[in-house]
Length: 175
Image (tube, rainbow, N blue to C red):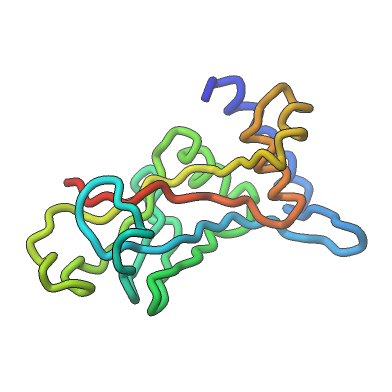
């Protein structure tokens, strides 16, 4: 992402955070939050398609941004997880959203792969998935109105709904 777009996005997020971190939707105030959800695969290798392998039940995950753990969660018995990274305010912009714009955030599974399948005991590396801010075509109009930055449109659309969606790319177990 170009530096000007990154600065615009950070300025917009800081503006929202400076306003008390709340977005008014009708009569109720909503505190926007950032979340990521998905399924942890029980597999080793690169670019694992979670739909094609068994899930990893009860896996412990960490969100790591710029080498700092920013959130933790545990997957359910079906391998699904939802991790709340916290409210979108000045405390989240610097440690999470800024590194995410620079591709410095990922999910890391701290539970050994052997816990979901004993045959994976010799698998090398940690199961990780890069994180990215998600934008969707439904928010493209807002993005177009702010200089053609669809990412900002996705975040702004999410904030108006109370959540900034973050997606995990496919998991890999590279060293």
